[in-house]
Length: 118
Image (cartoon, rainbow, N blue to C red):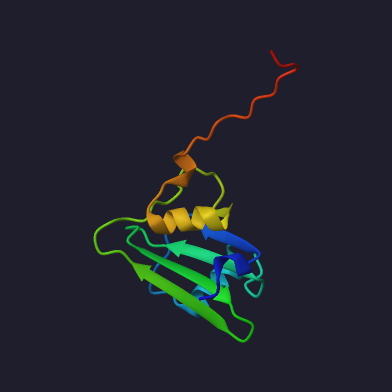
């Protein structure tokens, strides 16, 4: 697989996917259901209902490539709290998903703005 930083965008499909779908079925989903260009420089992430498997589809200049991972014991964290079916995520957020981190629950410090110093 190419480096994550070599992709322009990473799209995650939040709804469970029938994992009998292979490249043709997933690329059709990108075009028809996600309304995105399957031939773009983007990764398209899909998960199964049980959250033990993940598929990543991308166009590799001459054909589609499909990356597949199955966890033996753990589950992939999957964002269910978003309203959109397609979620645009960063490379860092994808890495967190692959590492098992529920990044959407992480709350960073809130930026503070002050008028003057002490």
